[in-house]
View 1 (cartoon, rainbow, N blue to C red):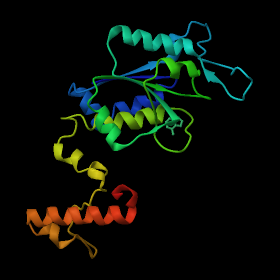
View 2 (spheres, rainbow, N blue to C red; view 1 turned 180 degrees about the vertical axis):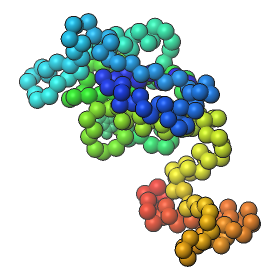
View 3 (cartoon, rainbow, N blue to C red; view 1 turned 30 degrees about the vertical axis):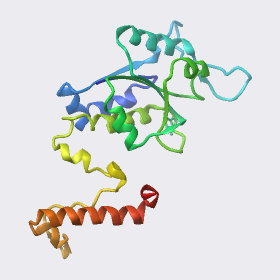
View 4 (tube, protein in one colour; view 1 turned 90 degrees about the vertical axis):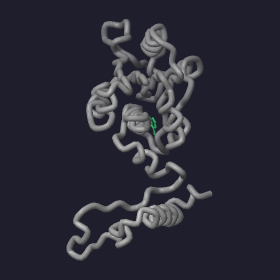
Length: 224
Ligand code: ADE
């Protein structure tokens, strides 16, 4: 898989791509992540990427030219499955979307900023618009980072124990059951006996019951 992220603030994403599982997945050759500074695609000497909106609203709008040049240059080099735009008015990101996107070969993620991008970019170049939740961020960089993390960890081989991605919260529409580690008794706070019993089938049954009980209590909407 290859992910190309177009942004005016690559430094906001730089840190996370060099950490943890996302870093390991790159080192293993499972994914390439490339950050592109949209200012490198400007043709004006101030490297400006935004301008005032037609019609005189407050705020600035990202211009077509640097974005179109960046996307065209990438598309000349390879085919892309999706050109994604991060925006609060996109489809809400979810685990099923992450699962689907983990199967893609190449994707571009364009991070929105200011008042957004010139709408013609969305009409002509974007194939999918994604929001990470009903709140407004200062830009799409954190959204791109969240999606990249959620997608990359699902690529087979990214997580050491393959089972562990499958038992995450939201896979199967269930929250994950509680987990515990040593010591079995911390100042009287005890781990449930069943987990110390060594009965694999009973433990699996207990985990499923816990997952169902927690989902019904905390996220009943997932069971509908
Ligand atoms: N840009 C600003 N807010 C956002 C959000 N909630 N999701 C995705 N991109 C955004």
